[in-house]
Amino acid sequence: MKGKILEFKDQSRSGIISGDDGNRYNFEIKEWKSAALPKAGNKVDFSVSGECAEAIYAEPLVAGGASKKIAAALLAFFLGAFGAHKFYLGYTKQGVIMLLVFLFGFILLGLPSIIIGIIAFIEFILYLVKSDEEFELTYVVGRKPWF
Image 1 (cartoon, rainbow, N blue to C red):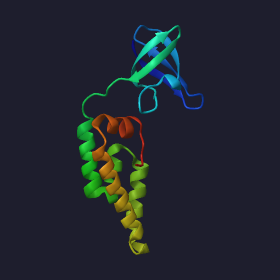
Image 2 (cartoon, one colour; image 1 turned 90 degrees about the vertical axis):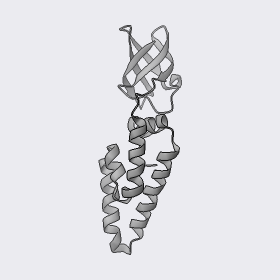
Image 3 (cartoon, rainbow, N blue to C red; image 1 turned 60 degrees about the horizontal axis):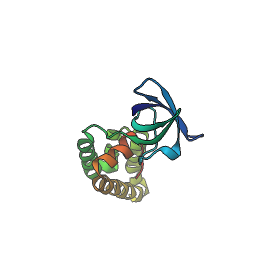
Image 4 (cartoon, rainbow, N blue to C red; image 1 turned 180 degrees about the vertical axis):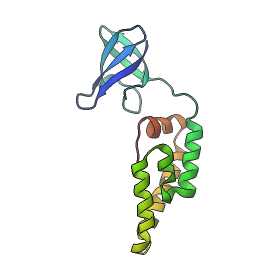
């Protein structure tokens, strides 16, 4: 059956799915079969056992992750020390941190600026190595801001 996650509580590691049949089903994290943690709004495919959802899989994401992945990787390579790739992916706080550390790093003989440049290069490599779906799940849906 297909449905949508209405709620997921990190504390109890459980949530509620609204099935396409109009019913609601409870689920535990042990039934989650996808890489990224469940999040409200995720579309899912699952089996039903009474009032509980089992064997829950996140539905594949729509195309577009590849273009976001390539753009983020290019920004990380060319403007990564300024945090451009972070701003592009919606991580404003992390982008500001990278920008300020890079700019004020020159006061400390450039060492912080070099470190930020290395971090940006590592993220460039990680973006390229991940598959389109894995990139989308990790950085867009999963909202993982660092590495």
